[in-house]
Every structure is written in C-alpha cells, then in structure tokens.
Length: 107
Image (tube, rainbow, N blue to C red):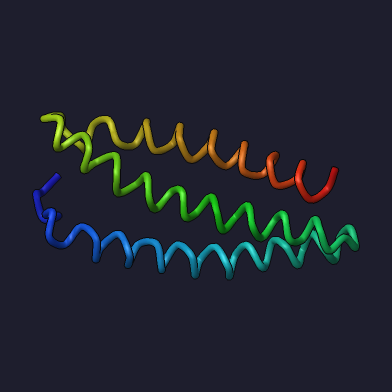
C-alpha cells in the first residue's frame, strides 16, 4: 500500500516471508502434531497435523504477498481487497490441504 515493495526486493522479501512462515509452521505444527500424537497415539495423524500447519502457513505467506502485489499491478488499492481474498484462500486452502493429507496418510 505504501509502495515500499519493488520488483527488485520482492524476491528477497518473499524468501524471508517463506523462511519465517516455514519456521513457524514447523514449530507450531510440531506442537499440534505432538498434541495429536499424545492424544490419539497415532504417528500418521501427528505427521498430517504438522504437515498441514506447515503448508497452510507457507500458503498464507505466499498469497499474503502475491495478492497485494497483483492488486497494485492491476491498479487497485491493495489494502481494500487483500484481506478478504487472503482469508478466503488460506481458509479454503487449509481445509483442502488438511483433508488431502488426511486422505493420503490416514485412509
């Protein structure tokens, strides 16, 4: 919204965002995975919880940076439409990521 992200520093900022979200996903996904493991004594369920959290945070970081840049490029105000689109993508993406991983590993 302030024009601080340019084409030149966008890759560096995206890499930084992905690194931070990946670390958060591993830490908090690991906590959720350990909780699921201790609660249900299922290693695959713990792996699904950890992986789903990691992938959802990576998706959120990617889309959270891509949508405002795309809206700015299209001549729209990034601050107005970004939050709704980001919420929709991360919510639906997280839902399908979790169910997809559960189908692959648990069914």
